[in-house]
Image (cartoon, rainbow, N blue to C red; front, top):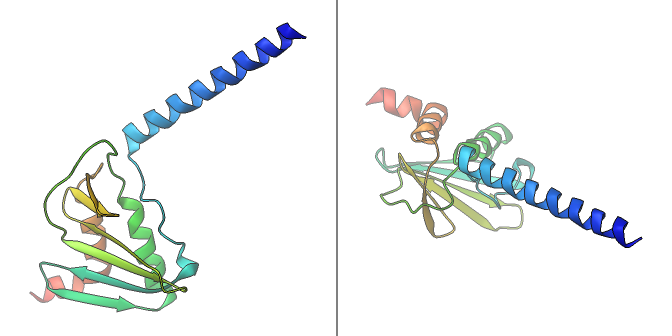
Length: 141
């Protein structure tokens, strides 16, 4: 009985250590996603601002809300790094209860929950957001 219990505890410890190692490797390799942003079905309104163009777009339709929510998936950051600089594009989400979530990013930094972190993949969020929402304004300049 004691031998079985020891073996079980050892197996459990090995599983926990392996899981922790895999999670750390995943965070280091792919970056940390932004946590706490509501799902597209829970979002009532989205405001997307572009600092260089000095434009703010407001969307309440399902398609643009879904696209704006999907953009946040590009904002994976390096959790143990501090970023600096200024935000170029910011996205504010308002859920159905009226709570507001805001994420902003520059070419290499993400700003979320009052903290700045280096992006794992630089410029991707800016390129995607500009292509989806500001392409007409950029082309008109």
